[in-house]
Image 1 (cartoon, rainbow, N blue to C red):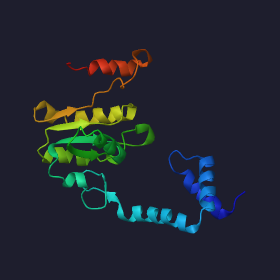
Image 2 (cartoon, helix red, strand yellow; image 1 turned 180 degrees about the vertical axis):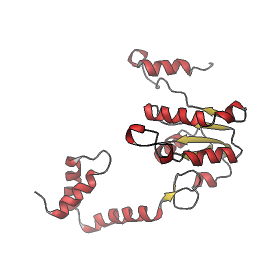
Image 3 (cartoon, rainbow, N blue to C red; image 1 turned 90 degrees about the horizontal axis):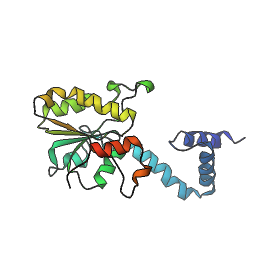
Image 4 (spheres, rainbow, N blue to C red; image 1 turned 30 degrees about the horizontal axis):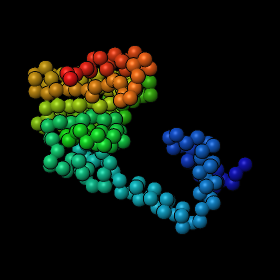
Length: 201
């Protein structure tokens, strides 16, 4: 239907998350309409990001240096590590301006059905960091879904010797009702967590 070159671009764009065949076609036709000087910067940006961006050797956040800017910031609380699944989750936590500790990016969540086990994530590096450093709290901020919960339980179990000894706290962010939400529309799990995570007024 399309020339091989056009079809190849559609196929490649279709591999992106959230981009189906129809969207890939629309993007391809849009790019074809643009003059070369408007398309080449996009192509160069893709090349540059693949050549220069890497993972931080300590926390596995995205960086262009050996260590990311958060790991290099001596003003951050060195005794607390917030564990997230992906670099995008780290950005979300940073936007709250409520957390000033360090991070550890796992690179996903445990999912045996998808063939993702502990060895496929940066879990060993997390346990090494906690064991070697002066870490007093690990905040497990994995997503509140089955894979995220399984990952959180796995981390808590692996760190249990330290928590039992009283040298480490393993916590999970409270989950509950969103601002502006109505009780009658909340599902049972969300409402249950809101009550479990209740606090003093």
